[in-house]
Image 1 (tube, rainbow over the protein chains, first blue to last red):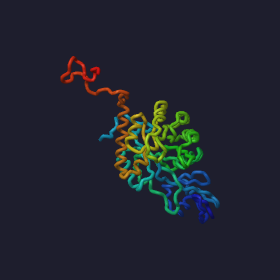
Image 2: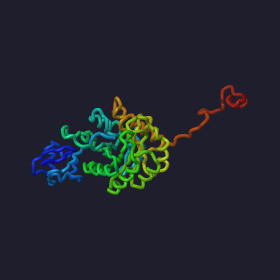
Image 3: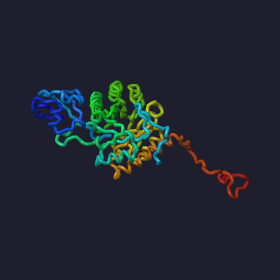
Length: 66
Length: 273
């Protein structure tokens, strides 16, 4: 299936959940925050949150700022 | 150490007592690995950061790995152009599990980078209701400041000069109005380029200063962080000590009596021409 992740399309095999997407992106779940279709996914729910074709995801982390 | 504050002088924000009145930022460092030494040298207890999309090719930055555990995290909502965007960023930042303090920045004008006070007040109201400790970045405008106070802000953060300019307290008179009028802490944020300028803000009665660019872009950020820590502490102590009156005319510091060779008890300065 195809997702939109941080503004770009990205393929991901089904079935998938948020934890699988983070693994596929090579990201440590502890240092990111994820929004799925405009709703924040709590860190404890990554594995229990399924992804559907066409989902829009934002994956963010802290960077330097004032 | 010279930066030790009066033991009973603390800044309380959102139920947290801070001994240091210097907040530091994490932007623009040539090497984020300097951040722990900057925190230690400055004595700061509050540190800011921003939230951004992860670059999926490069992976996330390790910023949080450089921030000492005892620091209060103050994420900002930079990048927000509307109140709704600021609220969205604040909720995401809180979901990162780094506390519930938020510095609201709503900037719709990318040329001047000045904050939108009306949108900031709306975001402040929403987030304060959700239990955030809200510190809004603002133009030092009395009516906006009162709106922010009414909306539940824990402090206000007026700019001293446009962000990143190192130009000092250009808004001095307006910040003085906020300090006089508000019951909230006034934390000068943006534009402070030199320790002397931070010291001046503290002498005026500012509750704290937030400094990022001036430290991060110094040739020696750790040395500059230490200098800012001392300047803020010195300015605070000066404020608490009640600066003497400013006078238009000269007033001798030494006695004007008892001069050598004095005749008739009159000081030479008092002899009519």
